[in-house]
Length: 98
Image (cartoon, rainbow, N blue to C red; front, side):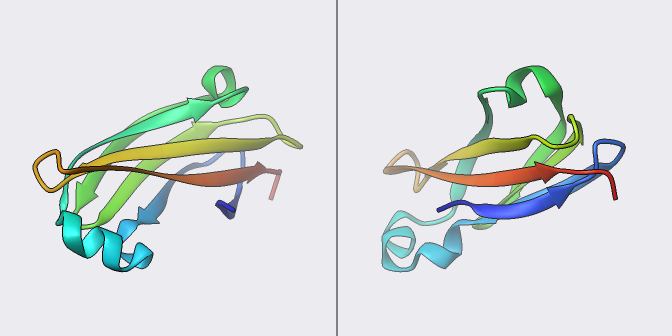
């Protein structure tokens, strides 16, 4: 089940996925070489990816937009260990006026 975070549609805010929390599988693969954030479903139309970056085993995405009352799913697809592993981790953004 993806981690869930509240998101105000008027905010521009960072969200993170830590691939190091996966344990042994990641230890075998090494650090992240590259990562792509995928907007699933309605997120494609409603959310804007402002920026993204990686640091070791952590992927960050900065998001703006959204429609209050909607839950969005974003997936980080990371390539690790010089292409040895490709892993996906998803997060949910629960969009609400705060």
